[in-house]
Length: 119
Image (tube, rainbow, N blue to C red):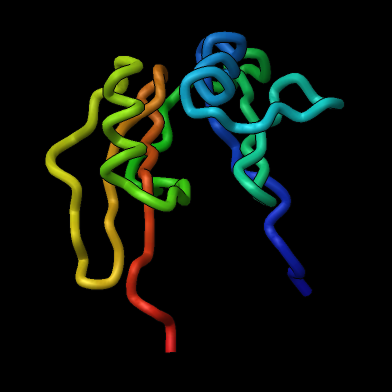
């Protein structure tokens, strides 16, 4: 019945600010037909403002979309140089590295790189 994930919604209090963060800071590809959609590979992030739909804003917590990078340490250092703050140290799970941070609205995100082969 369900064949794929079309997009992940990213709630924002200021869609332009969020777009700038995802495009300029994180380097995600902007969609050429939808101003508030950005792409991480084949995954679309759709930025939206709940207040425009009569809904209360609340950041997404504890879902942590895992943004793939080849080298978490290098990507983390680059983002820290752009002012991004990370929560704690980079986590090594035994199969992957993860570094947790938030966007300007407090939505949880992570840098992720799996280094162990999948069987």
